[in-house]
Image 1 (tube, rainbow, N blue to C red):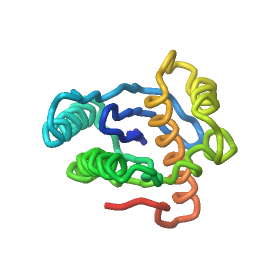
Image 2 (cartoon, rainbow, N blue to C red):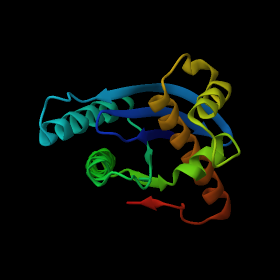
Image 3 (cartoon, rainbow, N blue to C red):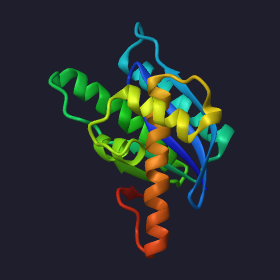
Length: 169
């Protein structure tokens, strides 16, 4: 199964693609969708939409997963993150993909083993689990971690014959 992991953000949306066969994971690709700060919010949202469409067309994932929004102290920032997250989530949904949603602490626990792990720990474990990913930034590592979390939960769900946690269609 080919999985697209998404780490949403208005300035940078990280994405990562992995292949999952049973317990075997392999790196396919990762990158960033960067928006232009001088553009309006609708123009930036369109940049995210266009970038996500390109990723889906190029790598043709079977499923997608996105990190849930964490609580932010700045309401304006939280709203903008929510807009970016919504766009990043609707593109795979529009392509009829299952989209899993996972809280950050579950993503970290799935990759590092601790829900309060730092970004440096997540990045290090991504390089251990997916050695062919090379040098990647935090947003790409977070997106790959989301994809790995989804792979673990999808695999467990298949074994148990149930519906995936956090999956929506």
